[in-house]
Image (cartoon, rainbow, N blue to C red; front, side):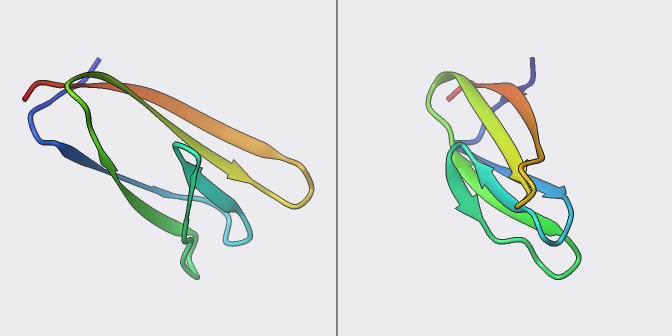
Amino acid sequence: MPFHTRSTIEVVGRTRVDAAVSVNDSFVDVDAEGRFRATVTLQGGANVIEVVASLNSGEEKSAVVTVIYVP
């Protein structure tokens, strides 16, 4: 489990250009090359970050990571 000493973390990734992407249930923009970026504010202790990419066809991929923030 990764430890983090800053109060925010940047989540970056790449997907299909026609995907809708959410990070912890907040939608983020996907650029013309399928790249996305989101800043997540961390609370002290364990933070679960979930990234979901969805297509109109119903196909969905997700990733979950837990980050421990040590203030």
